[in-house]
Length: 91
Image (cartoon, rainbow, N blue to C red; front, side, top):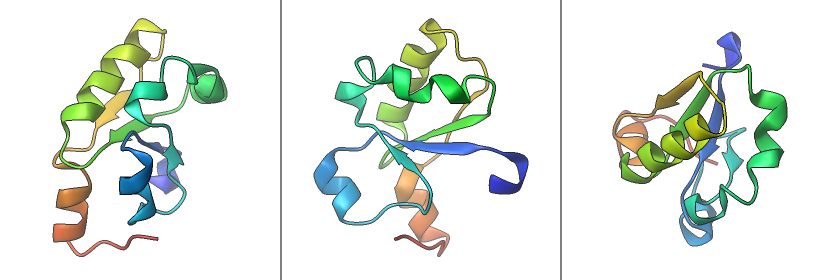
């Protein structure tokens, strides 16, 4: 993902983030994404992978970002649950 310039956006709540996250992910909880969308403006032409615990909240975040003009948006299927089940590392 990182070799291709993809950015991971973690939309989980702070307490979930505090329990572990993917290295180099950007943390913006779903309920804050509309107010903080400006923080992602420099990534508008990058591939963004939206991630939450299981995939539901990240789909909602994709809709918000699509409406703001982002186009290279991907949902991490299964979210952090699938990530850890595959044995991939967390910070």
